[in-house]
Image (cartoon, rainbow, N blue to C red; front, side, top):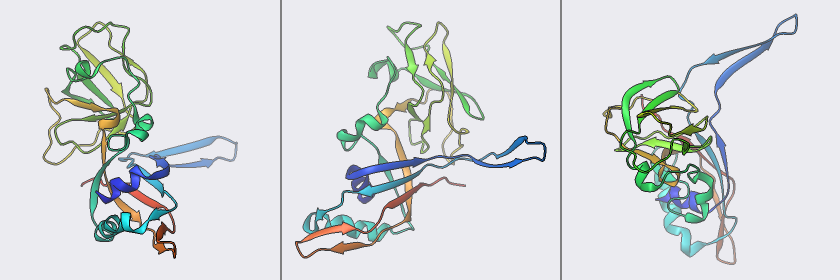
Length: 222
């Protein structure tokens, strides 16, 4: 859990899930943008707490050296270290029990996915299932999290359509079908790998500090 330790002891986390696009300005002053459809992997730039006791992080350093820029690890933001829960906290109106009653359907296309709310009990049509910026993921071993673009109310029907920050990614060995549950907020995880691994310096006072930031990129399988 070395990368989880890095997240849990972060002084700042920079999110990057930028679209791949190219913009040009024509002679008559018109801005033209071409968008390359892609998976928009999350890239997290993480600054570790400046000084830690060497004895306390020797094991973490060894695990980081083992992972290097080759192996991946699953991390969460706010689940393991609840002091970070505000970063990914669920903003909607539903209880944990009600969220557990929402399931996937077989309907998804591009950046939208349809969820079944037929089993949700005790809710009001005006309740917000998601607020813009909520983190969302399918349950049951699905790797890829999303951010919700628009507020979504429960409504009076049996389904809701959710617009996501990136296209729905199909995962080998996982079928998006009716009955799969959902994860939200601090329960969401990322499978990441280091793009950049900083060196560390051991100080005379028995402290250690990393000499740069960790850059973690979400791993998206072919």
